[in-house]
Amino acid sequence: MGIQVEKLKAGGATVSLRITVDGESTRSTYRSVLRNLANKANVPGFRRGKVPTNILINFFGKEKVMASVAEELVSENIKKAVQEAGLQYLGQTDLLEPAEDVVARLTPGEPLSFEVKVEVWPEVTLTGPYKDVEIEAKGVDIENEEMLIDRALGEMRARRSKLVDSDKTAAELGLTAIASLKCFRKLPDGGKGEQIEGVAAGDNLEVPIEPGRFTEGFVEGMVGMQVGEVRDVPIVFPETQRLKDLAGTPAIFEVELHALKQRILPELTDAWAQEVGECPTVADLRNKLRESISDEAQNTLERNIEAAIESMLTRIIQVDLPESLVEDQVKQKFAELMTQLKGQGIPDDQIKAMITKENYEKYRTGPAREAAEKELRISFGIAKIAELEKITIDEATVNEQLANARREMGADNLDEKRTRDRIEAALERQKVFSFIRENCTMKLVRSEGAEKARETVAA
Image: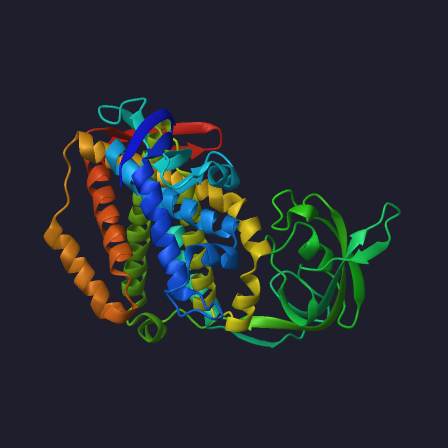
């Protein structure tokens, strides 16, 4: 088919084109559509493929026939036009006029022009330097290492502790209450309003009477309660409350104390260390925890440095993101979320109930979209830096990781192209981030209150 292509305008991730198809092409497409319809049509009195043209058009209707011709002309010639214009086409196209207008202008044997908007791979601009600069990252303070080890040992002992009846008759700090809880909104006159759903409530709950475990004032309000007593404990939900509509809201917990327990911790002995940590002595267990804390601190530092590099990149990357790529990224994140929920033991029927148009719409217009845009922006920036610095990835490493993925997931369950793309992107990211770290100064920032102590290190 003969076509002429004219670029009208380009803006970010889209280009507008005027495509003109010659008369011979419109005639041949018209005939092709009629042949296909004739082979499918079951017209009384005629064999398939032998229906006269005028009868065939009357059978389907002229508007439907011409709409099919126009649709085929547009879809086939967009791909050719994009190639002729030398564009990196992403597949998303839109007519810049109603399809009915194109159909109205269509006359087989005569040229046909129409205008389309196509999504293309965007141009990436770096508005600032990415090497020979100073990048600030949050440092990790492990000066209180022994305190962290003591805390870890305490948590290990608590997980293996036993609750036994207490001889106390009044609640005090350090005990565990067995209690029933209800939460109500607090009325202006101090009374109880409607019950609040979605917060700690239920019967015979274990409630550790420990400062800092719950909303401020709750534990303190329980101290002194007698077994069998019902008490109203007033609190105010903090501004950081998980349920945003409760932030700063005054409330009243109705607490019924059924029993008091005390937690018996196992003794910190070498025998216990052998049982829980496979270490000969408590000293060896402490050393093992010290190594674990050090490893975790290093991992946290690595994450902080990566986050700092990402923050630097987002400030200098200028790119108009194609909407189709953003949508694909959000869909992928939504699918990953559902997979994570399944991995957490959420039943399939509950997960299926979550996958609704309304839930997805809330998801795609919320923080997930912002996260998807950030990830895409960074990935475009990484690709640009790799291009500028001639950073390449080893194909043998890609193939090795792809082979590992086949073994783990099974060849039939593996989306090979998507997996290869993911592997290549991860390797490219590693190389570009390593390049940035080698060519920048990483400054670790430690904060204590309002003061900051800075230390320049070779990261």
